[in-house]
Length: 209
Image 1 (cartoon, one colour):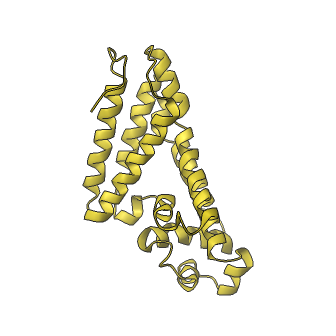
Image 2 (cartoon, rainbow, N blue to C red; image 1 turned 90 degrees about the vertical axis):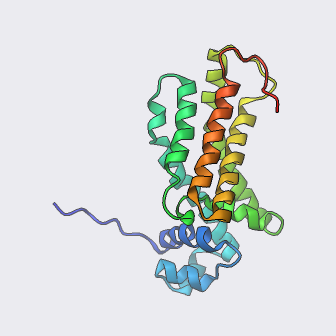
């Protein structure tokens, strides 16, 4: 039986183009003409859907959130009964998807944030909403794991969730700097060790050092 092809709108194609071009070249170096060429649409189509490149970037950040949100919602770590196992499973899943070339596994919104945080406030806010929105999905499992182990530390579930994203974004920068995905994977391994130390059965305080 032939698979039914889903027709992509010009807007969808332009947003999909962001996933490839921005992660490969960065936001600032990307020209509207390149976006249109990658999407296979006209410049007129671009400006029909977006006021300007920044408007496209904001929509691309939201598109990224929707796409990655679906990926993580269906990820296997949710199948664990224990919330701590789900948290560790999340970290291992993040490591497992560090595959291919750098532009294939690095973060669209993280890449844009590094470039535009001081020059495009609306785009920066869209990137922040994506990053912290994803971090918030980890908070319930972190809180449940803390409660299950009777931990009352000097840190919050939200702060640890944000820290996981800080490590991941830093890992992507190291991979870009070296051209080596194993550098990023090593950082994720250290993140797992750190979380295991935080939740060690006999740990009642935040590790030092």
